[in-house]
Amino acid sequence: MLHDRVLVRTDGPEGDRRSTGGILIPATAELSKRCAWAEVVAVGQNVRAIEPGDRVLYDPEDRAEVEVRGQLYILLRERDVHAVAAERVGDIEGSTGLYL
Image (tube, rainbow, N blue to C red; front, side):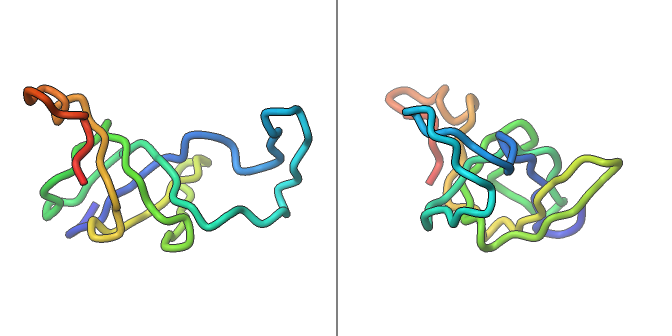
């Protein structure tokens, strides 16, 4: 990874989904405009607040997809990350484990 780039893997499949009531929602249905969580796989040398293994909150519309060895990843800039959830942040007394 170069500069301020962050490579992440999404949590779940992006195909058809099911609602909590069991209704099948097709992949073509438009999602609401909300952020999504993903796991960090690699970071560039200029990334300061994120480490591999952290979970990050990002806007799915501000992403670039890349396929590496048949696996689909998302490439982000550090400035496009809205929050970081990590065990190392939660070690501080009274902390929630989120770095906003």
